[in-house]
Image (tube, rainbow, N blue to C red):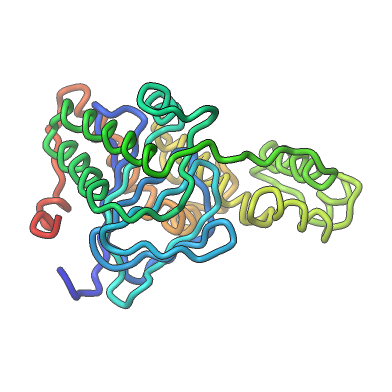
Length: 298
């Protein structure tokens, strides 16, 4: 498939790695809008270049490097070269990373990655080995390799990133606005109405919110809706029902935003979750058609 304009992605879970999302993808034209993840992002670039905006600057991750994003950190993603980029990624939970950090490092406080790009081909290969082990149903290898990879990355690039605390009046207003949007996700107020309810001007609220959360309220709300839709899909809610439940007008509306944040459509995302449930019940053997097509490139 090298040199073609074809894009392919698989976003899944392996039953023996609970709470860890897995991804293999090749993107050419796809552009991820500014969004966040509840988990860590550990993306191992195999070919091409990914560009992602992170904390005010564009970061470039090429073959042999890793793109590393801490939980709840706004970032984007797009191709940095015409042929796009191919990568594998694991998304371990903050709890798992904290457990590994406590056992294998001297990091104090909440662990995280210091630099968003790390040049370390050995760690890149470890991530791809985790994905191969999951494909093959090798639980011992998948769990071991994941822990080895996270330990290495924390030792090479780990620390306790400073967390922005809500101290200023603007930050407190932003936090109150966020709480309102979370509560009224299905029928949110306009920016002007929200600002008036909080006793500030619309521009003051916009500025404060972007300073606090890295994106304007409408973009944050879209991201929050997709994150809530993820949890509903994980629980078995249909994409059409999830779309309405989180405030999108219909399923195509959810599809568009979901794919621009998660990288796959909600239907494909949910089918992989069902496969994991079937594996746990012994109804389905692990399989990866995408991996079969791409094995020669991994």
